[in-house]
Length: 213
Ligand SMILES: C[C@H](O)[C@@H](O)[C@@H](O)C(=O)COP(=O)(O)O
Image (cartoon, rainbow, N blue to C red):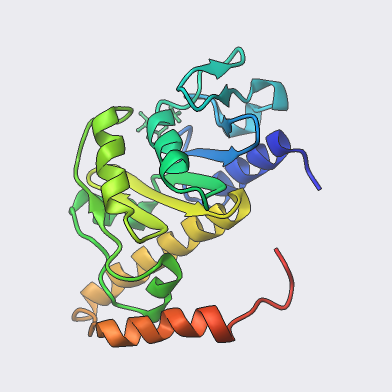
């Protein structure tokens, strides 16, 4: 089992390796008993070492030599509002960001949207990066959901831990890609609310991984 700072670095590098974020775009965090470990701002993921990871306190202050991600506010606000969340991933992945640029939410186009708590996956109203206003808009878009898009920006996914958040961020990009392709194929036929509810129930009762992640 990796130490939390190593887990964070591994998740951030995996995000980049999966093509979910180019350069230093995106950020990753995880919850610990002492506070929130979050990737430092504008720092290449391959250069990260455990000592470079700041510890963000619940009052917004931080410990460490490196400044936390410019998006620390929405990471912190998500943890404060959602006690079940243990990891948050924000990315500028191509299809997620293309939909966010078009200011489109993702509707009930595939039952896998049930994995995020239901449909639609909303697109948070635009606000400047790094602001409290963006954080407010993100929390609103995340109501009842584990992921959302952000207008003219990118996507956010949450999970019980950082690996679950990374898996959700990857699934978000896949769903965004499938939805975009279906638009080009004539547009998706949307599932009903009842069909999405059934899928949520099926995931909760009849779908279990064989191997614990
Ligand atoms: C300006 C940044 O790209 C910002 O938009 C942020 O969302 C991002 O993706 C990376 O910022 P940090 O390096 O500060 O985490």
